[in-house]
Length: 218
Image (tube, rainbow, N blue to C red; front, side, top):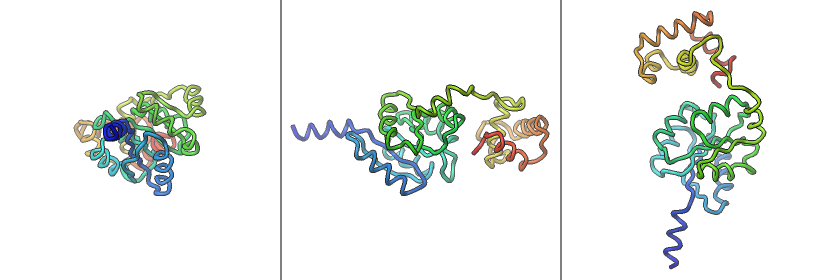
């Protein structure tokens, strides 16, 4: 009987991977989550690539993901992670308290958005909600999201042009953009020319500055 109970408990554990580039933050999160009954932190990652490797090895129930880490941008990675690991829900833990970031993350497929300043009070609840297939959004930030209408594409850019502009601003070459979006390089070059014409900009540096000023990339 004791063996059967132990097996059942193991099956019921909520398995979690933590991804944050600061070791001291990961340590604190592990202590917080491991102290919760039914939770088990199975791995700690310092960037998206290592998080992906641990997810392949452990198939966790939840990924707790920082938005600002070196390497592959977390926001860009979220849809890919959701596609590769549909059984793993994602809870973002971040210092970014702007409504635009929360809206982008939720739109990309996360179920939880928790501010680091509120982690002690909210992260456990957000993880449990995610496992149940429910959304959790920091209440104060949720009020801001509700109050601010979602922005449309700026300055007459189409959604596709906006997508390409973001990728260019993040350092992708035309060839990389084409490969990522399944377009020809010529098509990307045409879109880029239209973007520069609409915005009155002449080179990559100006495109990057525009994207930063508009909050299109962090």
